[in-house]
Image 1 (spheres, rainbow, N blue to C red):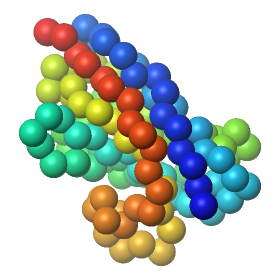
Image 2 (cartoon, rainbow, N blue to C red; image 1 turned 45 degrees about the vertical axis):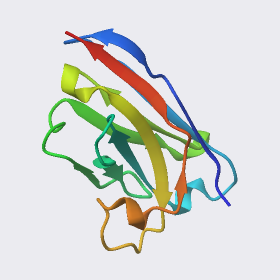
Image 3 (cartoon, one colour; image 1 turned 60 degrees about the vertical axis):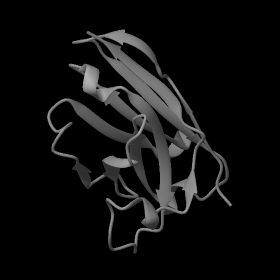
Length: 125
């Protein structure tokens, strides 16, 4: 069992930055790959970024590539999402999630076993 708690969301102007954190419980954090997803009102949950267990491999959605950076600190049981050059279309509830590294479809929400409660990010124009 893994419990995930996101923090760091808020209201920011377009062009600004936010850093989301995802704190995990338990001693097996380093055994899970981590992902960030987001869901805007009336839209499906979509993949944002993911990071391998060691942090050596990352993937991003095209819409955030070059602006967002995913990272993790296994000693602190925490994953991060640094978001720069924010746009109004980035407005959504952001969720972190964990999955077994053997999962094939790493951008699919269905591959992730544990989810946080979400944190709201609102970007004003």
